[in-house]
Image 1 (cartoon, rainbow, N blue to C red):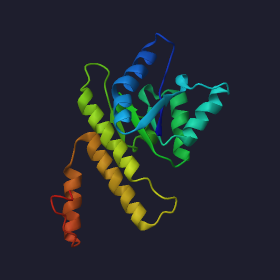
Image 2 (image 1 turned 180 degrees about the vertical axis):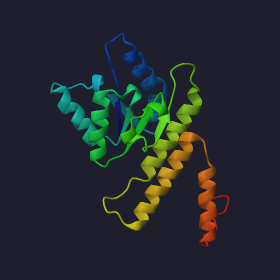
Image 3 (image 1 turned 45 degrees about the vertical axis):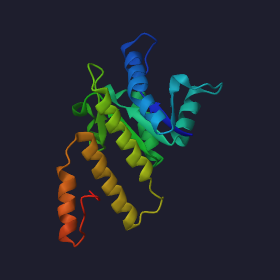
Image 4 (image 1 turned 60 degrees about the vertical axis):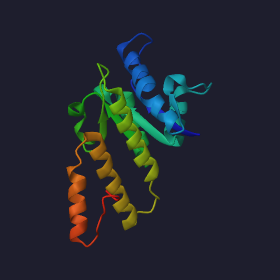
Amino acid sequence: MKKIFFVTPIGDKNSNERRDADFVMNTFINPVAKKLDYDVLRADLIQSVTDISDSILEQLDNSDLVIADITNANPNVMFELGYRFSTKKPYLILTQSIKEIPFDIKGIRALEYTVTAPDIDDFQLRLEQMIKVIAETQLDTNNDLNNLGEKMGAELLMNAIATGDLSKLEKVAELAKMFGVDLTSEDK
């Protein structure tokens, strides 16, 4: 079974951070992961006798997907996201506020959520779509033009899913038509 490692502020047992982390994992991530045949693990749930830092790094290296909640820019989460980024393996960013994303990573797609009266079905659908796109477009280590085009298309699609704005996809279809590529409604 594939594995998702959920990187998030955890906090003490009865803290707001722990309640939010549990809510996001149990309400949003676990149902989608189960549907897509993934197991989900979080640092505080790792069953190991080794040093926790080593266990976290092992998960960051070996998980099929890392989902990082960067709400409030927790230093541990930011370090772990940076580490995962350096592996060039798939990751997905969640946040409670797109506006509060640090400048250095503002250009990376993120999925915004709320823990106060959330639209659970909508968020789960967007999360599922993003995970599917990531799974379907994992790139080889070589950077030929086909892979670059696939990556750019996947990023465009994921941005459209995250924001709900499909206008850019329509513009791509128009551009393709200008270059003689006729996209039927089945391809869009």
